[in-house]
Structures are given as C-alpha cells and as structure tokens.
Image (tube, rainbow, N blue to C red; front, side, top):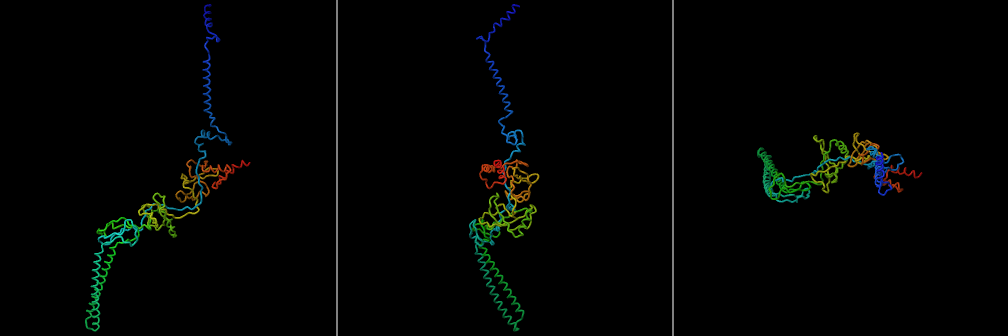
Length: 452
C-alpha cells in the first residue's frame, strides 16, 4: 500500500502549477472559442435579416395599405393587375364623317386610237415627234398622193364627156317633142330619146361620185390626228408601203386630258351610290397612288356600268379627271376613293380605340376616378384613322387608345401625358386651357385640406 500511494503522489508532484514559468498558456484555446461564438452570432443575424427584409419596409401611407414592394411579393399576378396601368386616351368629339368607298382602279383614256392609213401607198413623210402632244386635225403623216391625183383627173375628164353627151341628148329630146306636137314623128321616137337623156344623167352622177371618191382619197393621203392627245412611238418609217390592213398602224394616239379611271365596287354599295346619283349630286372621286398615300388627282363620278358581274359580285364605275398636270397615266393602277355622303355631327374617336371581342366591338371608357369600364358600341363609317360611333358613346367621353391590352373592367389607369399638367397645378401655376374637367377636380380636392 505504501508503494502504491507513492506512485499516485508522484504524478501530482510532477504537474507544474499555473504560476510556474514553465507551464503551457491556455490563451489560444480561449480565442478559438470566441471566434466560434462570433461566427454563430453572424449566421443567426444573417438568417434574421434575410427573413425580415427591413430595407424593403416603407412608411405607411395612412390608409392601412401595405407598401408596393410587399404587395408585389405576396400578392402575385393579381396584385400586379391592381397597379395603375399607363395608357393613352382621347376624347370623343362631334364632327363630319365622310362615307368613302375605296376601290382599286385602272386609269383608262377616253380615246385610245391606233392611227392607220385608209388607203394603200408609200409613206412619204411623218410630221410628228414621238411623245408629242397634238391637237385634233393636226397632220401626222403623208402618203404619196400622185396615183390618186391621176385617178381624179381621169374621172373629171369622163364627167366632162358624159355631160356633153347629156346636153346633146336633151337638145334632141326638145326637138322631137316639137315635131311630135306637129304630128311629124312617132311618139315612140320621143320616148326613146327621153330614156337616153335619163341614161346620160345617171352616167354623169356616177362620174361625179368617182370624182368625189378620188378627192376623198386625196384627203386620206394626208393623215391627221382624230383626237387631241399624246402620240406614242412611231410604228413605221417613211418610205414603207402601208396598207389599211397593217395591224400596228402608224402610231397610237392616247387622250390624256381629260382622262378617266375605271374601278369596281361591291354590289352591296350600289344602292347608296344610285340613290345619291338620282338626286343629281356630283359625287367626288379622289385618285391615290398604289400605296394609297399620295393624292394624284380629284375628279367626279361619270357613270355606272349597266350590269353586275355575276362572277365577282361587283359593278364597274367610271370617274373623269381633268388631269391638268398629267399625273394620271394610261393603264396606271390607282386607289379610287368615292365620297358617297357625309354624316354631320357624328361621334368620332380614333380607330385604335375600338376593339373586337366576344361581345362585339367595344371601347374602354375612362371614368372621372381614373378607372376604366368596358362599353359595347355600334360602329358607323370608318375613314382611315377615324371611326364614327353610331351608338354607345357620347361626345366628351374619354376612351383608351393605347395600352388597352393590360386593362380589364374597373382597372386603374394613369395617363403619363397629364403628369406635367398635374405637377404644374399642384405648384400653384395656372393650369393649361386644354386640361380636362376631371383633372381640375383632382386639383380642387387636393387643395381643400390646405385651406382647412
């Protein structure tokens, strides 16, 4: 026992005391514990901050509503729909709405003549320049007239001979009639002489007709313009032998002033057009280029075809144009706009405001509290970017023209174009004359607390 107690006491004696200079220091182990505790605190603080989000909290608006950021995070798509949507609006106004029918047409000259010779002969000369504007009766070409001059002279000689024979026969007839009165000759001889006189008279008439024919040939040898217009390219050169059977002729003459446009409209539009024409009113027609943007010429409706094309259900119309600047050219494709009538004092809105849905055509009407409501309307005539409203909307009401794809019944809206006006009114400056009554009302209510 004594030996065991000695063995147990010996380690205690070997353990140095803390105050001994040779004992190891516990400082590193204490610092390591502090670092671990600090890291744990930071982790807990980070978790709290991530779940709390104190930086997203905003001062309460006074109405008890959560801030916009919280609504967006916790409300989902429905909360996004409740946010005011920026839109563009326009005010329905009264005005004149034209009833216009637009159709594709072709410029058609009133006279398109292929100038051909009416007799055979050698083309001596041409008296026009290609593309020249000529008047009716101007000389265009000359055919060699000498063969026809010779034929004319021959016919005149034959006429003189037959006229002399006729004169002799008439003298003999007068003599025979005198002798018959004296009962000196038979009546049969007198009758024979009378028949001879009539025969010569017929021959003289035939000779005169031949003379007139050759004179007309001489007139045809000088080819003139049958109408006023513009000549095209020459089809034959001088020196060629021309005949009436030539297909191309000598030149093509096209009348440009005035000129017409032939266009087709649906048979459904025919009653309104006929009703207007029967009153004797002149119906204006405007011709635009193929892009339907540039006005070329203004004219009037001239006539309507006498039947409807059963294959297409359309009818042809012709409109005449003075064409002083020659902006309309033959066979040119144009867009014809026929003004059938004009509706006065119609309710007009931009075409972009009218939408199509399952319930039909409708618009978003802006209420005074800057919310919208769906209004079903009946649309009247449309003129490009303007649409007339036959029923369902009154003048002075505001409708949404842009941004309607994000709207629904009762949705709140903002009008960015009006923000500068509101800011100016809130600062005490005079409001612009174009501000709406609803905006003045907002500014009036906002100033009441200040007065109180």
